[in-house]
Length: 185
Length: 185
Image 1 (cartoon, rainbow over the protein chains, first blue to last red):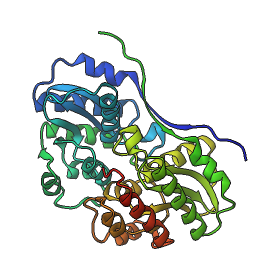
Image 2: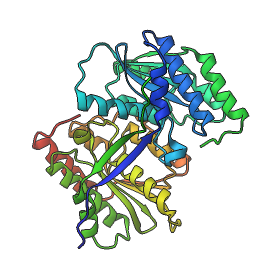
Image 3: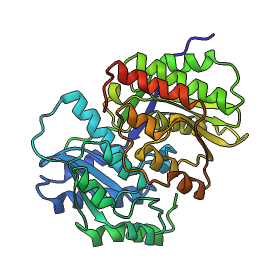
Image 4: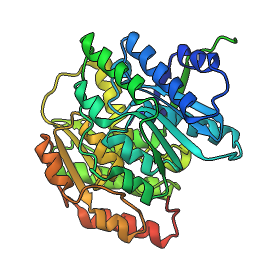
């Protein structure tokens, strides 16, 4: 029997994501954080990716950002929220940053059924969303079989949920993607 | 502004996983496939990981196997099903293997809420499970807010579900983990 070697799953995040993060100043409120993830969503869409962005914060400090990488990586799981969470968890595992405030996921659209489930195990304490599930669906995306009371379920598990922050800006990113004939997957 | 470089998320799968796969012969029925993933679950548990294994098949051909890597990687998303699916999608993206039969995920325990959601976007056509949700819960694991009619929802989306294949063997792996005082996360 041939001996195997350790193998790896590798997901690349292009440099422009962190360059965009650096180009923003301090992100001290939900609106400025939402502005960043909506910008990431638009930039990803303009580069041929899915129109979704997300970022993880500890208090006012950005830990990691992500964009949808499904089309480029062919990994169906590579939603913006999952990318941001995995990056943040790798940063925190490496640096052991002290918690300086609530562990927060900010996302350009309400989470889909998969990201809702991933949130449950992520230790995230706050979720901030811009566009609504209906906005994604109006642009042709399927958000999947997420419980209709998903906000209450998250709140019941200790995740405070704030929605509709810059909703209109985020909705326009989704709508523009649809108008350009962006691929729905 | 400092220029950023592309960054990466890297998840390592230890060599013993694929060595174990190679040590099994052809896996031509659900029972032999379930035997593999239950073995992977037990081996992972004995090495300090979570007691869960999974594998993806195209027809009779194994595409990729996975084990739970949450504790080692500190990635809350790194469940066995997600690892196996990401590995399989990377293999298929690279090799463009023709589909020679149903695209099947075999898992040592019913999927949790996150893996249920991930399945929705994975293009998997068949799901085969060994231990039940209740078996994982009896061992102290939380399967999360998965819809009670999750099997019907998957079937309605074109995923055929077969449960209880080698359930007792798989249940024992979970129970042994609990008896050894394995970490619940």
